[in-house]
Image 1 (spheres, rainbow, N blue to C red):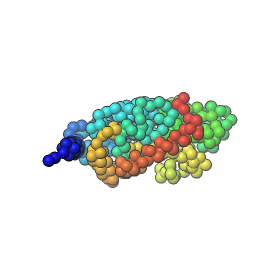
Image 2: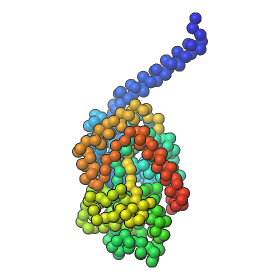
Image 3: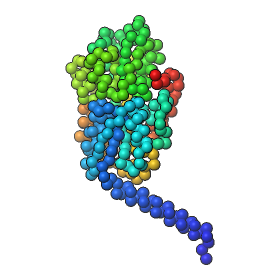
Image 4: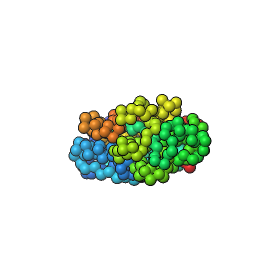
Length: 327
């Protein structure tokens, strides 16, 4: 005679099997229609440039079209909020720097839980950060930036792609380390900065490299004074890193990757990671990313999640020690 407990156990086991089979089927059938990737920054910047390279290759790999949608604002927070609230079915993803998750929550109120409302799919690239002088800047070198700032506090204006970005942290770290007063000019993304730079709207800018920006540097319209990178860049061999200049805390880069809404089935996450990593491993992809002076970085979902958790904790300490706030 079968006990009631045994019957219930079989019933629960049966439900579990049905749920597991449902997830398997969902992943097996996925994707069956177009996928939307939210980029939380304006068009024409580094993230927009790179995602269009990757989306083209990824669409071929998945056999479905990919729609890229730019939703800029609040240092990436607005776009990533859309991702966090999307259906966890693999059809709405995010492509962004990790700062909206690892940095923004420490300096502003964000409408999501950075460590619970997203599933990291995998990293894609890291991007160096240039310190560039615009035609408005009267100095010639990085040392001039420090000297002028000390002589005339607040007189030098420096633009970044917004509050809560790595550029914002670099400004604050430079202020603290050098003991200078720089006037921060936050934008909603990187593309408009380069346009305004040529119009003399500010003295300096911190920006990730992309095709149009690199062209302005080659034409002499913008002058590199320093770079946030592990080592000097091949395209800017004479430009010292912040670490070489004695500002290790300022020597930061941007890490970009793919994200899904929290609750997205692991089977879909793993399939996405596999296909994204295949695309990132292609020589043609790496050459196109490297052409705009960025570097492909491949990871598993677990590795990317670990990086995000580590950076979240590290940035909490940096923000507290430097007393950084959204202005």
